[in-house]
Image (tube, rainbow, N blue to C red; front, top):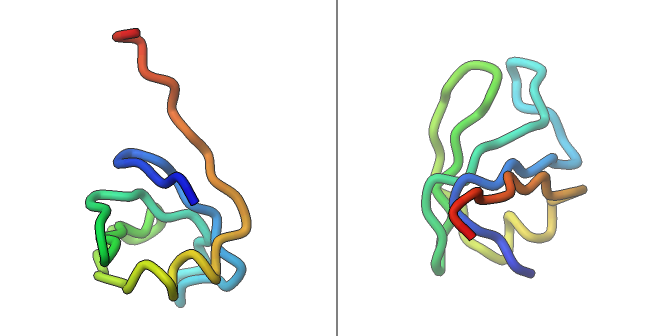
Length: 64
C-alpha cells in the first residue's frame, strides 16, 4: 500500500475522541500518526495500521 507523509488515513475504528481521520507524520516499518480530532500522536506497526485503513485522502503536491 502506498502511504506517504501528509496523507490522511480514514480508519475503520474511531479514536476515543470520536475521530476516524489520522495524519501520517512518518512512514517506514512503523507509522507515526496524529489524530485530527484531539492531536494525540501514536506509533503503529505498518501491518497493523494497513489492516485498519478504510481509505486514504491524499493532498496533491503543487511542486510537480
